[in-house]
Amino acid sequence: MRAQLGDQLVVESTTTGATRRDGEIVGLHHADGTPPYDVRWSDTDEVTLVFPGPDAHVHHIEHGSGGGREPSPSPGPRPDASRVGAPEAPSGMPPNPGDIGRRVAAERLRRGLTREEAARRAGMAPEYLAYLEEQPADPTKASLIGLADALDTTVAALRGAGVDAPPGQGQALPHPRLVDLDPDECRALLSTHGVGRVAVSSARGPAVVPVNYEVVGDTIAFRTAPESVPAAAVGSEVAFEVDHVDEAMSQGWSVLAVGTARVVTEPDEVRRLVEGAHSTPWAGGVREMWVAIRPTRVTGRRIVPAER
Image 1 (tube, rainbow, N blue to C red):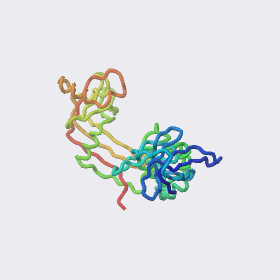
Image 2 (image 1 turned 45 degrees about the vertical axis):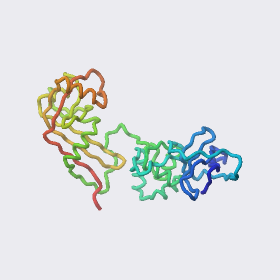
Image 3 (image 1 turned 90 degrees about the horizontal axis):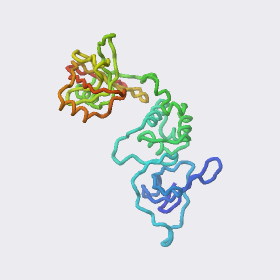
Image 4 (image 1 turned 135 degrees about the vertical axis):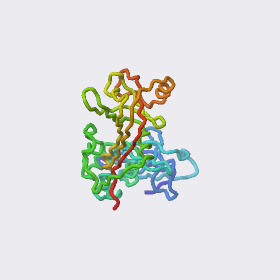
């Protein structure tokens, strides 16, 4: 497929042959006129970057000196959830796939398919499949149905059905390897904040409770209520754990910090923690007691594919 500025891109229904959408090509990204194109859609007047699929063709317009709208300069990429187009990744930026893209890539690799083979089976452009796998995307239901059929899976699986189930129910890597993390890696993973688990000895026995936490310097801090289970950590040595499981890639990591917990009472320290908090406690309620843990030992492990 080749086009010039001012040509019309027409997307037709594959079942009826009727025009579904059309727009003017206002930007070229390759000197030879091959895709992708910046297209100004006639129904919305918006400009999006398009990788034409098998249901699209170019209607060539005579390009004389007179008449016709002057093509506008090629704009920056804009999101487009249609099956026939998608924005490119910013130049020089590493891939940043969304969950659907990671699941698609994982299923494709499990079946030993190249992107070209999978795209052909799904009836979409290989460039669009590359975009889905490498950038956060919101493909249409038709695209997901085609991909699910091509990859011998289901739309629900590609969308992450079963997200309420405990993590780790998917298949393990063919050749997994457990590696120890060095102290710098452990600190970096801890500092991502979010939700961690504090292990304490309460009046009713051992307990492990999830809490929203912050990292300030070399201290882990979380908010709780004075009579809550996490408050039992104060004055004793406790364990604090954070982890991440990547279901799509069958990989994950965990970091364990051990240290003595104390109540934060100094007003300036409390104020800094409140002002720097990334979130209020997800559990809600009044939780104004800050507990701080200064780890004396930090260890971590990661599951990765074995070196072949």
